Image 1 (cartoon, rainbow, N blue to C red):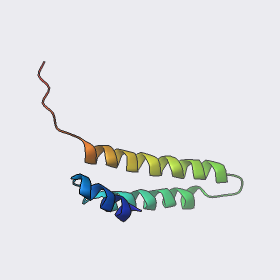
Image 2 (image 1 turned 180 degrees about the vertical axis):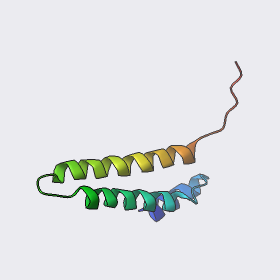
Image 3 (image 1 turned 90 degrees about the vertical axis):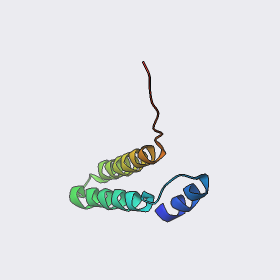
Amino acid sequence: MGLVQWLLLKPQGIPAVIWPLITTISYILAFGIVVFFSGEGREWIVLGGMGLVLGTITGLGMIWLLRQETAVVV
């Protein structure tokens, strides 16, 4: 998934070389949450936590990639 997103971002001129790494790390951490917290009757909590971790890390990574440095004069 990270490679496909990288291929889509590359023609837009976005320097997304690190994007596959960000995606890989987020999936590994999300899987770690599933393994660590898995147990009887906690499946929905674990899946919710996995989605939150995955969405947060990839979202913050995309914000970091798309940031524009601007000078603010007050």
